[in-house]
Structures are given as C-alpha cells and as structure tokens.
Image (cartoon, rainbow, N blue to C red; front, top):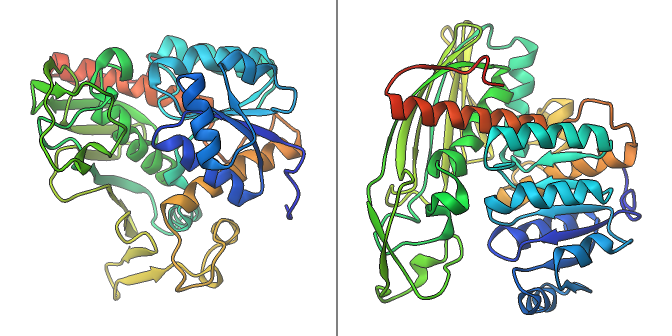
Length: 391
C-alpha cells in the first residue's frame, strides 16, 4: 500500500517507558497518525506527549478509549495490565497491538483470543523480531523446501542488563511480570521466531532455570528497562526477594520429531541484546544473529557455505516487501517495529478480519503463554512436560 493508506487510522499508545516511545517512532515512520500517549499518571502522560511531540496526553485509559479519533490502541505497559486493558479496548471497538506476553496466564490469553474473534478486530502481539528482512527470508526458504525436512533448531537469547544485584526493574517481580522472567521476556521472542521460521509446533519441553540473585536492591524510585546501568554509583535500596529466573536452558521436542534447545540469560556480561539461532534440515542449514542482522548464513554439505547480505534485489518477494533500503544500507531493531506495524495496519486497511494475518496474532500470543506454563511446570517438576492438551 502506498503513502497515505493509513491516514484515516488514529492510534493511541499506552506506555511511556522504554518500549512505548519505540512504538510511537515506528508508527510515525510508517505514516500512521498517533493521537496521543498514556502514562501511569496524568502528569507522566503530559510530559510524554510534550517530549514526543504528540497532541494529547490522556488522563487515564477511559479517556483514551472514549476518544472517537482512536481506531487502535498499542499496549506497552506492565504485563499485569495487559488483560484488563485489552478487554476494555476490544469492548470499545478498538484494534489492539499488545506487547508480549499477551496476558499473565493461558486462561486469560484464551479468553482474549475469543474476545478478539467475536469483536472482529485486528489483534496482534508485538513479536517484532520476526520482521528483520532476513528472518522473513529464512522463513520463505524453509517453506520452499530449500533446507529439506527440518530436524533441529538451536540458539540463545542473552543480555546483561540485570547482571548485578543492584540492577532492578519491575520485570523481576513475579506479581508484576509473571512467574517466568527471562523465558517470558526474551525467550518467547526466540521461540516465536524459530517456530514461525521452521514451521514447527512444540510437543514437549524440559526446562532447567536458575535465579542468580536471590535478592535484589530496590531503589527508592522505579528504574526503567535497560536504564539502571547508567548510574555511576551503586544505588542504595532495600533487599527484595526474587523468585523469577535470571537464566535457563530449555529442550524442545517438536511434533514432527525434530529437536531444539534454547539458552536464555539476562546476566551474561557484554551481551547487550543478542538473539541467535540455527535451523538444520536434511539438505542444509541456515543461521542468523541479531548482532549482525543484515547477514544470513547458509550452510551446505557438498559445496561452499554462503553468507547472504540483506539486499532487496537478492531476497524473495515476501522479504523484499519488508526491506525498505538498498543493499549496504543496514536495517535494524527500530525497523522491525515499523515492519510489524506495516503488516498490522495493512490488515486493518484491507478490512477482512477473517483472513489469516501475517503479523503475530492473539493466537500466537496464547501459544507462547501456554508454552511458558509448560516450561515452568517442567522446571518445577524436573521432568518432560507435554504441551499438547494444554491448549
């Protein structure tokens, strides 16, 4: 769709922390009109609206939903608020793009899937990493049969922003973010990505998780995601008991017989935000890492391996449609939000809410929460847990 295709769609963003402004930027770059922003208090809403150059800072969520200029709502708020706010937004007739996880448990996510279907609204979960152009290319190559039958996937998602005991954020608290943290926060990005690329469905999981810091020092004020390490001095604070994991390993059995493994960590020094995967099949393999997102490694048995540089002229039709710059002009993390939102708003503009979407929908968000519950049950029981039948 050309420029102006989304000009009649007004969008409000709820959330003013790390990821809310990322949504605002992605929407603006796409040409979607952002009506305003909602913070945790009326004052934060006003401050965010001013700093982001938006026309409105909503006093509360009810005021946002009553705004007739708002067609869709983006939720970039703490996980514990996702379910209630999504229910209200759908009831108000709004389309919803929600940050992951979709809700706190599978009962809630199943209910949201049903509500979105009944409301006939577009309902997406922001698994934006799918939308690096070379991840789309990887998906197209696997679907074409270029790798043959997939027999394994392996990889990791690692960060260091919670390495020290003094590192603190609401995400470390089970009552705010959920019983799983590293797996739910970043591990689900990896799981969603590799299963969508490889066309796999998880049959069973075995998990071993670990909390490095049994307590963390909570400062007097809240610390936004990724910003705590900016302080030059060690902050003083009260010791808070932590019951979410800092790192872990998960084994997967897939329904087609393939195997997989994931290492996830938020305490790996020097790795700021690194996702990597390798998909191996009967006829070859491919691999990608977020630290070099414009390169896709292609592995062969009987000829030289290849490195495919992101260049629209060299990509499949689908991947080319989500790559906006010429070869040699790198596309990165902010671009994935723009492209994810492109798929979402093209779907809204098309108007057929019975059609299968290309963006991750609420059903995808529900599957990830079901998997998280199976992973947690596996860790606690130290045994394989079947995923089928838990949907």
